[in-house]
Image 1 (cartoon, rainbow, N blue to C red):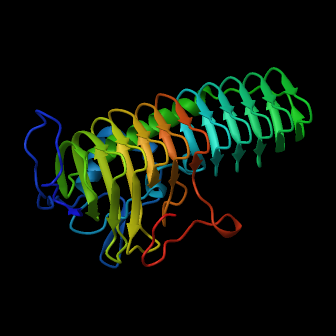
Image 2 (image 1 turned 180 degrees about the horizontal axis):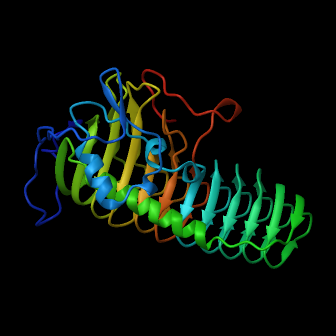
Image 3 (image 1 turned 60 degrees about the vertical axis):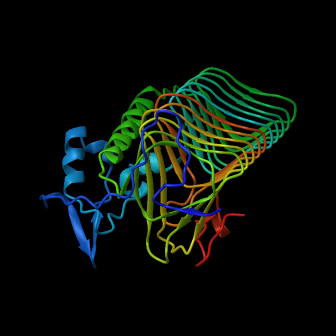
Amino acid sequence: MLCQIPWYFLCCEPNSGSLIGAQPPASFQNETRQHQKDGHHMRFQKRSIAAVSVLAAGALVASLSTSASAEISMKSLLSEEMQQQQIFAGSYMTGGATSTIYGNIIAGTYVTTGVNTTVDGSTSSGTDTTLGANSTVSGSVQSAGDSTLGSNSVVAGNVNSGVVTTFIDGATSGSESNDYYSAAAEMERGRNEITDVQQFLLRFAGNVTLPEATINTDTTFTQGIYTITGFMSVAADITITLDAQNTDSEFIFNISKYLSFGENVQVRVVNATENVVVIWNAGGGYVTLGANADIVGNVLAQEYVSIGAQATIVGIGADCGGAMYSATSYITIGAGGIVGTTGENGSCQIPSTDWIKN
């Protein structure tokens, strides 16, 4: 059965309260904030949200009208430095065997990959880095502590270790150094930035306000900002369709608690333009992807992010990449998991008119 918003056909958890249908867009006073007109849209200035205090962010929200596209994207929300990270883990990051990460990784403590892992980017760790056997890193490896390269692993760039670098049988790198490195300041800025972005998004008055619920039937969402007052859980084998209706659409899900996708869940985007944006913002908790889940969008979590074996998260359009950010905790990737996407010559994957992630 196909269900369209409002969510009158969803199954709520006990005592979650009655379902709330679509709310009319809130009207806001125009304030003198930095924005510019582009046709009929109001665009954010491309600047870091880290430069905006929580109070200023709230005022910035008030300057936007939900009746027109706010042109929200990860590029408009995050600093250039943070945009360069495919994975930001407030504590540690681990990747399972044969996992693939299309982009850079930075973690507050250690970075560990399984055997036959591919990192199409660089890694930075606040303590140690351990690469599994036969793993490849197309960029560099930087560790405040030790770096250990498993047998036959390859780092194309430089390996810099604040303490010791160990090459196990057949492991190689483009170069090697032992310069002092600390991730403390960078991680602190990153944690603050992600938290500010999450709180900024949570202050938006969404098109639809919903209580916490478990989605137990295939469901279609149209463009908008969705406010979920509690958790959002998608049962196993469910398909979530995001229908962009051939417009430059934004799908922003602001969840006050945690977000959970069950096994084999698919998120599909249809009738899309190249400027579609999908953001999953778990402002008060964690995000999990079950085994074999295929998810589209970028993830912001206050706590941990965990994706199961063979699960995939990719980006789309203006927010290519499928990045995962954990402000305070860890990120784990199951065996065979894929984070991010890349097209020809490393370009973003652009959706077709009727785009569905394979």
